[in-house]
Image (cartoon, rainbow, N blue to C red; front, side, top):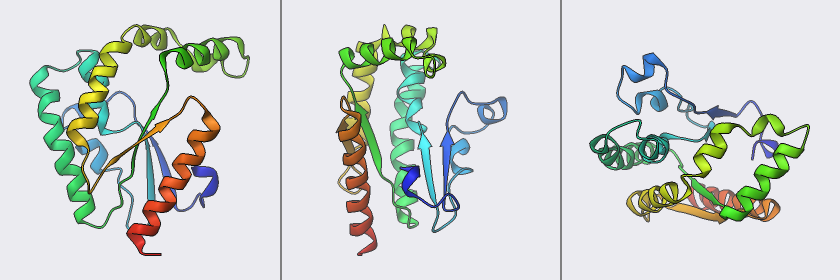
Length: 177
């Protein structure tokens, strides 16, 4: 996505483990403070959905915390939309077999081997738990106003084109271009 944009108009925001400062505040605070100014773009590499995926599956929080997060997330996104933001959510889906092939390819590549860690392999063993969490997340946070776009990503080229086409269609529709 970023290769097609003017670097002055967007920010790519990697989301990792919350800091102590972030943990001392309401969960969504860490995202509120990173929202773009009007007319700008933010691309969250991972997002507030980590609450109902990673934190849930890894048991980093208790069930009442992640269960209540669905309503918080839906309200948060509704507030963004009500204030003029265009929110586009993608889930890029690959098969378990494709993930394994990519893991092995990364391990063999001197340029990509740093991208695969023991953590990736450990998380892979929880594939079924993550799949269950993803299915619930999609069901509970999809809406006509703010839908999820599910993209088959086994073929990276196809996935990139599908994402671009979806973004363009949504922007044309929202901006009445």
